[in-house]
Amino acid sequence: MIISIANQKGGCGKTTTAANLGALLSEKHRVLLVDIDPQGNLTTHFGINKADQKHTIYDVMLNGRIEDAIIRKDGIDIVPSTIDLAGAEVELTGKIGREYILDNELKRIARKYDFVIIDTPPSLGIFTINSLVASDYVLIPVQAEFFALEGLTQLMRVVELVNSRLSRNLKLLGMVITMFNARTRSSNEVLEDVRKHYSKNLFKTVIPRNVTVTDSTMAGSPAVRYNKNASASRAYVKLASELEKKLKVK
Image (cartoon, rainbow, N blue to C red; front, side):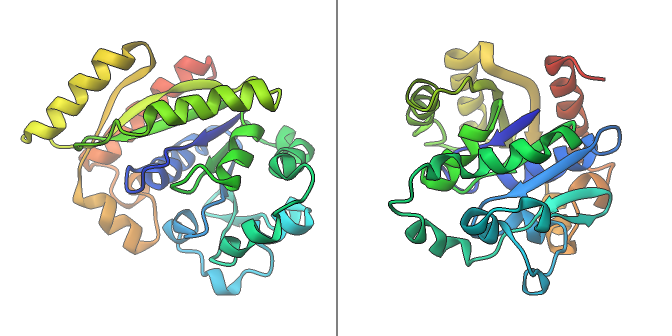
């Protein structure tokens, strides 16, 4: 089962969601995390030194052989990223079938895993398209701040285009509110707006804004492992459980 975590808006909790869901799901399932963001934040999230990596997602996108890029860290298989990936978009210009590169690579190894989770860049460029094409589902984190809903319509349109023009069957797994602060008017209004317009697609779990998330990132560990009692960690435990129930896996 392959899940893209996507939203072209930056700072909405994509990487944090990918890292924590990956960590939690790996306790019971075989998990592969794929970092296809040139910023490499998911790679950093697990304390991986990018400079030490001989093979990364950059090499996969240009030369294939994703199995050479997989490293094992804290019980999870991870395909790391580096800033080199930013140049790959230009190098792939004009390449026939470039939208299917990641899909073709994952087809060879996906059976080894119960979950493949892809952390996408904050854009709707070729790397996000590759992720969506390769995925069964897309999970959309929505930051509880003003303007958070801007771009959601565009993202949903891209999902439709991936299905119609690239012959996929990509499904919306759901949206999850992140960085929620119950004491602010903006957070509450965003939550109500999303509930109003996307109630059928909204996870019940709400991820609160929590300093533990920042601290855990600096420590090179997901929040659920850095401090399992923190409010954000407890929320991600609920989200993982809700996700498993929605996908009917144990």
